[in-house]
Amino acid sequence: MDLESIFPRLQEIIAQWLSSFLPGWLAELLVILMVVLAIVLMMVVVVMVLTLLERKILGRLQDRIGPNRVGPYGVIQPVADTLKLLFKEDIVPEKADKLLHLLAPIIIVVPALMVWAVMPFGKKLVAADLNIAVLYVIALGSVTSIAILMAGWGSGNKYSLLGGFRAVAQLFSYEVPMGLAVLSVVMAAGSMSLQSIVKAQSPLPFAFVQPIAFLIYFICGVAEVNRSPFDLPEAESEIIAGYHIEYTGVKFAMFFLAEYINTFAVSAMVVTLFLGGWKGPILPSYVWFFIKVAIVVYVFFWLRASFPRLRIDQLLNFAWKFLVPLGMVNLLVTGIVVKLNVPVWLTVPAYWAGNFVIGVIALYLLTRFTPKKTPVSLR
Amino acid sequence: MFGIGLMKGLFTTVKHGILTYFKGYKHPFPKRYFTEGPAPRLEPEGVGLFTLQYPEEKYKMFPRFRGALMHLRDPETGKPRCTACGACALACPHGVIEVVAEGKGKERKLVDYRYNLGRCIFCRLCVETCRFNAIEMSHEYELASYDKDLVLHLEDLLKIGDKSGVSEKDWAWK
Ligand code: SF4
Image (cartoon, rainbow over the protein chains, first blue to last red):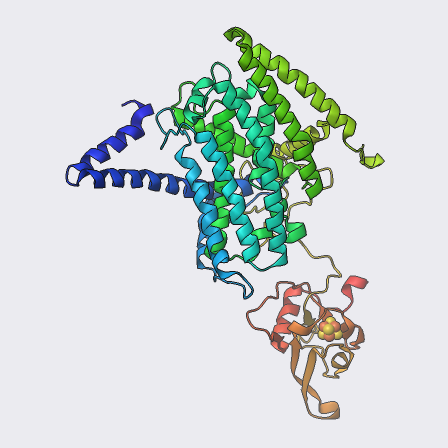
């Protein structure tokens, strides 16, 4: 059997078997639930693998070994972590807003899981090929900030409230350039469905056609999931743990889960929008998808090991004074190229020329206006 | 130019990450521990893996390290040198030591020596005052316990002393 259609075929077989003894609507519902369950379970496994990988890779990048006690080479460490979190006592602070404190961890996980409904894992492997998938993903990204603010306010703790404020400021600021970067891709592909965006990336993926949009999206992606160097909402050295400071046990596990699912989701979006999604030779498409996502996730870990945290004013300045104008200019260039109706062989060179000019100007401005405060000894 | 510093930073971390597989312990994957003994410490410019795998490998403590108190034996008679004079108990700023003795004058004999580890601040004043070469700080540092009043008695202190192989007070100062 063809490896490409193994999963759709499996679904068909199960649907036929179910409808042989169940009424039609129930069989259909069960099949849908089965897909949902498969995605959720896959995400839980992915999160477990990611936590281990992050600790291992981060350790290596910092001259350490990383977990190596539980099981051979520490591979059962995530299981031990999960068990520990599940058995921990659930503490609700006395001053907490009980309802918000309870709801926040639930609300943060749901959108993180919902993103995967539209993600094209492979050529024939997408739960729902929405024609406004890009809009859907961006909208779900904003729901996260509500949950974070709920957690920050509901905990009744000044550090968590600070973390919540920071998170909202950061997420809203970085959604704007992110939207602009996505928009130029959508314009170039001429569709908002992720599946057709992936198909539009031939012969070159958009990362090589529109490098500036790619960079903007990548930076905003890191900021969206609160990862270092943009991890202000949970900066350990400043506000201890930020918005999830008062959470223990299962509730904390929910935040943890959402954070890693979001990291994975942003990597998957980078891959889908800019790196050609599931496209690739020889291997089945879903394998290619996961290989590419793994590479992007590695870059995320690498960034975390390399860069110190930004200050909040630097963070917001960078978003509003640099990324937003850059995204707008990039959008303008994309619009001109699309509108001019240049012949097909000329589109890619036209994008390159536009991106090159913008890139050079942006680099010049950054170099010119970045304050040079490096101590003489470090220069 | 902007961005060169960022590139340098990224390059540094990835260089360190890759070199951990080739330098240091020279094991492609982290083993649990090694029999070669304690690993050398990493110098500032160093690359590679040098993590000490604690319970299996331990650093040798420096000679003047102050761990739990121990009692010393006279190597000839094999008896503890302590005469139960009580000078250490008087010198201790925390009242950690309690000397239990029997008899008066020449008959005075040591029965028990209670050392409340939980209150000791490892200042070594007790050792300084001892005239009979009877007590010294050991290199024992794994002293965690499940209950709050961890009191070591004479036998425990003698056991630590036997384990350390030290028979003279102030050996590290000579
Ligand atoms: S080391 Fe200091 S605190 Fe500890 S028993 Fe001796 S005198 Fe007391």
